[in-house]
Amino acid sequence: MKEKYKNIYQKIDSYFNKMRLMRPISQQRVNRFIEDFSISTCHNSTAIEGNTFTYDETMLLLKDGVTNSAHSITEHNEIIGYKKAFDYLYKAVKENVIISEEFIKKIHSFVILGQESAGEYRDIQVYIGDLFQAKYTTPAPSLLNNLMNNYVKDIKKDSEYIQEIMTEENMDWVKLFHL
Image (cartoon, rainbow, N blue to C red; front, side, top):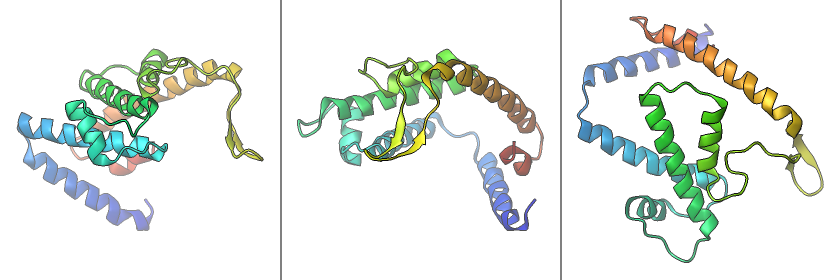
C-alpha cells in the first residue's frame, strides 16, 4: 500500500466500524436517508447533464408531483426517469439481483424515459466533442453487444470477489479498492 493512502484507509476503516456500532438503524431513519439521498442524486446527476431544475423543484416533483411550466417535458422526464432507475437499482441491490445486459438496458430505459431508444443499444456512431473536433470517438455500434457482454462478465467476476472480501471479519480496504 502506498504510504499516502494509508491515512485514508484508516479513516474509512474507523468510520466503517463506527457505522457497524450504530446498527441496527430504525426503518424510519433508513427510509428518510433513502428519500433524501435519492432526491439529491436525481438532482445532481441530471444537473450535470444540463437539467435546469433546482434542488427544491426536484424535491417537489419527486415528493408531490408538482412542477411548473418553466421546464421542458424532457427535463421533467429526466428526473422522473432517474428516480425510477434509482428505485429499481435500490430494490435490485436489496434482492441481490445478478447484473445482466437486460438489467443494464432496463436502467437505461428509465434514465432516458420517453425517448425512442430507451433500453436499446445505439445504432449510430457517436462522437464526444464540439462541432469542429471529436475529442473522443465511442465504440462503433456493431461492437456494443460484445463489449457489453464482456462488461457484464467483468462485473460478475468483481462482484464475486467483493462478496468474498465482505465476508472477512476485518475489512481489507486495499483489496476492496484495488480489484
